[in-house]
Amino acid sequence: MCYHTEHKATAKELKKQYKATFPEEDKFTTKEFVNGFEHPLCPIITRQNPAEIQLYNWGLLPNWSKDLKIQNNTLNAKIETIHEKPSFKNYFEQRCIIPVTGLYEWEHKGKIREKNLIKVENKPIFSLAGLWNICPNPLTGLPMNTFTAVTSDGFVAILENEEAWLNEGKLLINTKTIWTSLVAPQLGLF
Image: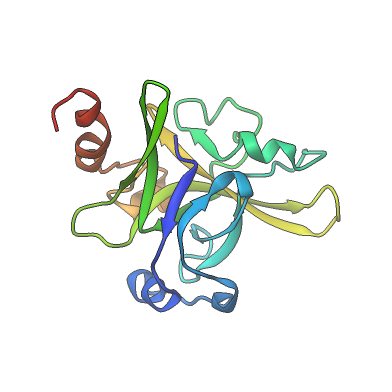
């Protein structure tokens, strides 16, 4: 699961990496530790508008939601159940990529929790798979842009091929990063 990321790339670096404009770049700030439970504005690139980086709140808000509380439960969408869950099943065509410079996973050592920063080798900026939605904020009625990060088998989907995800919904995951950063240490291999 993915609830915390790192966004250290500048707007200029994001625009160069994704060959995209960033109309709201003045609202974007780099952060070493982004907490999804705070529902921050994060950069995403949608399938419908791949030439533009946009800022969306983390935690997908379904159209039927009556309040914002559901966002704590929609930070991640499991690819295995995405077509079944009411919160996500209508949004599969609204795919996006989420540019990050790192993500955090927690390691439990008895009663102690340690955060581990995961990066992708030779890729200072990499993409996570996501879904997005725009719907009225139940409190204000104003349009609210939201997204969720897609996970697979309990791991965040670090994309190997952004275009395959955006255009075809194919989740090609960078398994080397997942293996060396997450699985191998848990098995005591590194």
